[in-house]
Length: 343
Image (cartoon, rainbow, N blue to C red):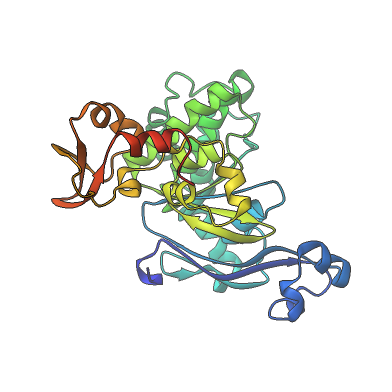
């Protein structure tokens, strides 16, 4: 994917905190483990040589344990933290070259952020919290309230336009945060662990809300989380970070089926593989004398969703990629995945 076809293109991004950050990038010390680098130089490499591209309309999830660098990374993408080196291109514009005025304009009009801390203005009603960025942009009260009412309906806040934040639950407050981010109709949305502070049931509702909004609006999203279940549910692709570096990047299925190392394996260990992996992963050539039924299934079918049909078939089931057979699967193949046999 080239810069011109990517919504976001990040190349060789570094963020080093300390007395001489510029001297670390490209030096032999750059490859030192984080603790050794800090002890030797007094610097901390929070983001280490990260590169990735995000397609228009993609939900790209960055995840990792606390201290892995994921939140620093997303702040570098919007220059809330100035990267030490590297490039960040958003819809064809290198934001590293943007001056302060242009950067403010980009933040107000082209991309928006949703944080774990809702950051609502307590003295302003919901409609005015949502319309705040439009107000800053000089939009008239009539027009900004009209737009705010549109997104109020979009995120399910009907009837709460004139409530104050303190009158809302945590989930409702985060809906206001989402609505505020959507009000300017941004090209890219950055969401930094937006649901971490919410109760599990509310969190699940908000995840479903993001999925619904993405389906309706098709916004490009970069979503930060430490929760693999959340990452799998929301992400088209996932990047897993450790000590500032990306250790593996791919679809949820890629990570579950082929973890790059023990660190990724630990993340994915408790995820039911049959809930994520598709038939494409386990399709194999038919063996000699193997009975093959007339049943077929698309290769994109999640294994869990195919279990009943495969178990009830009178032979192996043919897996199709379009109209082309890529192999077969049978009951033993499926049961091996469900039983944890696929590594």
